[in-house]
Length: 133
Image (tube, rainbow, N blue to C red; front, side, top):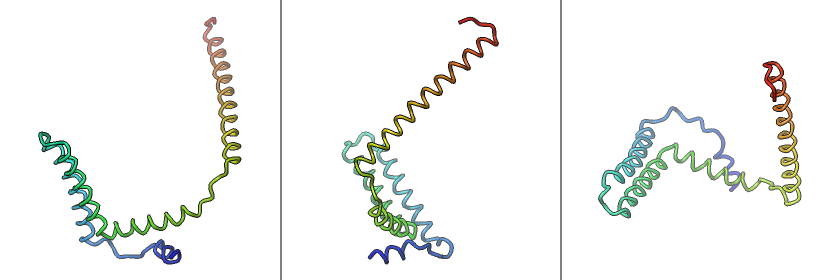
């Protein structure tokens, strides 16, 4: 299974985008847009019906997009990404606490550094402009 997914992840050297795929994507976008427009166009209708119009437009749009080569490529990408996500080694509790402590310490050190830099620059500006504290 994993080998098949890896093969699907290989870049496909397909010819230029077919007009069918372009038409499917345009129709998908129009279906989604139509669902949103219908939501506002039929503002006097019950809310549940208007939400159903949006959901219907999204479902039809996703179906049309999936029928295109772009949609199938995206689905393959999602499957391969899922396999790769399983390979991630997540840090344990001890490592997470240690890294959080390092980040917090670094943030405090940088905050003190910039506070000191601001104080020195303010003092020098007042000294140069002749203003008293």
